[in-house]
Image 1 (spheres, rainbow, N blue to C red):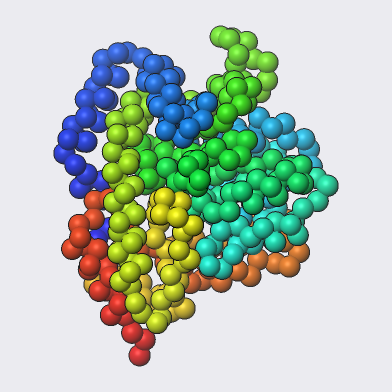
Image 2: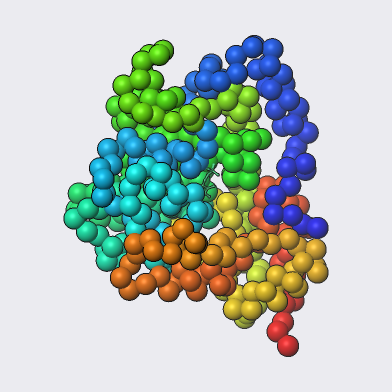
Length: 367
Ligand SMILES: *Cc1c(COP(=O)(O)O)cnc(C)c1O
């Protein structure tokens, strides 16, 4: 079976260095928020080309903490997409803001500017822009739009490690970028981990406090924070895995290129080409098919695992049935949820695996 992710197939030397890093932490006797976290924060900030990174417990907390640093007041609204991981919207709720769901663009499944425009009110405080599947697109437009309307741009970069536009990295366009290092992400830890990045020293200092009960110096709590600290073991292993991230990203992009050139089936629609080669890091390679269930079954029989990102748009989730949204509805998110399918696209795939996936997709026929 060609799997969506295959950690056990990772390079042996990577596995050995991860074990050595874990052992070093165990022997150090320091397990939470220490030197390994500080080192990884420095490395990640440098990779992203920003001044500060703050390690936190997971990607959802990174979004919540980013929102908490911008002083959400009761009634403040934050606009985001309905076609995202549930965590994006849950983080907005947890930060005390009111989420407002906007629709997507058909060709990319990314947030639609026109839809966001329809969602604007006097109470709009920020937009959480999700770089879905690993795509960076129209960042200049989003910056201009937010500036024009006096609202803040926060980036959900959980799927977009190393994605670039005009030489700048995901998370460096808005006031803050939120990263997840959940195991399946392009840079993943063997457990939960996340980080917030920013160029704003004040915001970084605030995030530093918020992740640790709102504590400034030991036993002094000038505000109410949360417990979202990063473990030393996760940080040490992330520093190791970071050394492989460039090569792993290039492999994902090469697989995507092969899919783009060779998938040819009138039943299957590809998403739009990225703005440039490095503007898409292919966390997921997503296609659309009106007969998705049949295609998924056909692929399964051919030994190809697939997943759906996401089968249920956020506004159809039980706690969100009454969540505010685009007055014109969210028909494109609904259509995408009904037809999208993610093909395996991970760095451990061989050229043979890639060809197997292509042949399997191309041999799909409805009869
Ligand atoms: C994974 C993910 C998150 C949440 O990250 P966790 O580390 O699982 O909390 C948020 N947004 C998007 C788009 C994601 O893919």
